[in-house]
Picture 1 (cartoon, one colour):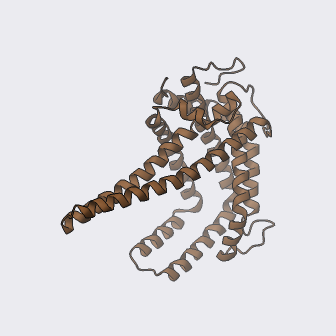
Picture 2: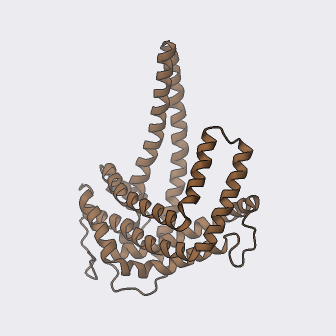
Picture 3: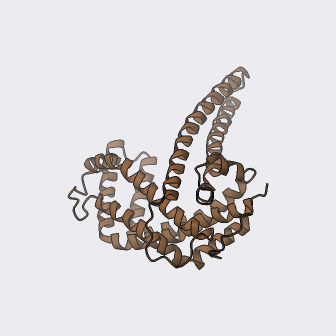
Length: 317
């Protein structure tokens, strides 16, 4: 089976995201506008939401009540965007869409595939916790049986803990990369929910997927952090960093730290209400580019592995 081409996939993803920005924007803007609007409506202090910005306990209670619904809506909106951009990247969608908002079967299939993935990951997460605990116990017994000196015993315990951490995080990352990367093109092109298909196609390509992910996510994170620093002001983040430094140094006790964090959170929410038009615009622009990168990378990799020709309708980039 062919392996995912790393440099070609990265180059194609950036070429697609830049060259088809307006086409991707036509797909992204309406679903993302709905998501932004819902997020603003549940924001304390925003128009129609009279919850006090400086009441952290009530904010926390409302967040807990709304998290499940907001999460499902967000996942469905992203499935809608994922189908539209993947169709474009696979050459199944032509023209420049003005408004895109789909409730068609592929959107529900991608939504269902991601829900299935989350369920599988919960089970794997639990399994990895059990495995890590077992390895830790067995390793601890072996270290104790070795009857090492005090210094060597501490080194052995530290190495055992490091090994358990690497085992847990590494296994989780490996499974997530293999399962998720090709979900959108498999759903869109093959018309089915089949996590095993993506697992099969990515055999031997974990490190390739990892490098592709790094090449895509690191620049996006840098851009988003830069935008937040510009919009919120560096003083907001400097204050947060000072609080964390004081907490690590033991200069702030639990209750004092909580009070200071509540004040900082209220200030951040107040600032967010002041700049929401700008943050919404940044979300739309960065989101358009990000979705173009992510879904075109997986679509291109899928086509290369399966040797699937582009649809005659259109072959962007």
